[in-house]
Each structure stands twice: as C-alpha cells, then as structure tokens.
Image (cartoon, rainbow, N blue to C red):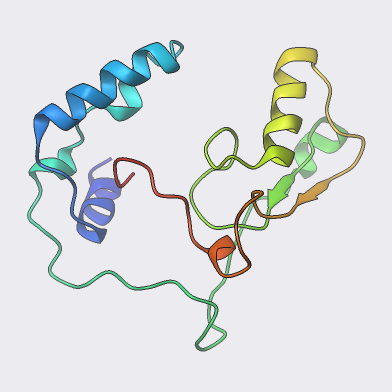
Length: 142
C-alpha cells in the first residue's frame, strides 16, 4: 500500500477539507450500503504534500508510446468474458454511466448470465468523441 499511495498521492492534489469526506461518506452509505461509504473515506493523500509537478494532460495527440496491458483469462477458459469500454478512467461498472457495461454487469449479478461472447462497448452515451477519452469527474479525485 505504501507504494500505491506514494504514486497516487503524488499524482494530483486531494481535498483537505475533512467535512467534504464526511458528507461524501454519509451520502455513499445510503447509496452503496454494501461498502457503507468506506470507498469515500478520507485517504492518506488528504494529508500528503501537494504534487511537485503539474498533472500530465491525457490526449490522443503525441508519440505512440502508450501501452495498455491486461491479463488474459486462459486459466478460466469459457468461465470468463472480457467486457471493454471505449473510454478512459479507472473501472467502468456503475462508475461511468456506460449503459452497455452496466447492463452486462447487472445481468451477471442479478441473473448469473455471462454474455455469449466477448463484448466491446462504446463510450458512455452523451459523451462526444473528444470527451470519450477523458474520465468522468467524481466529487473526489479518486
């Protein structure tokens, strides 16, 4: 965890107002009872020094030197299906309002059904081609 926070906390400044976290935790306790608001709790980054370098803007311009990696599912065989979304950010299910991803994830959780094949979803509805490469902003920067 120390390495994780050392990287994450140095990437972007986090709010330092404790009442903001209290408000978010209370709201998320009601909205997401399974996690009881824990994901919105105050992180160590709120007490971390501010980043010393400016954030790097992520765009589709520049050199072709970005590599995205992911594990294959060979060990799981046909028990697993990858579902991808053509958008940026960290995580997709119920976090980016992508109806394609949300429908497939909910179908598995509610009815136990995987899609018959691998699925490639487009960007979330209502996002332009330019905005599709930018993650949706949450109230907090994580």
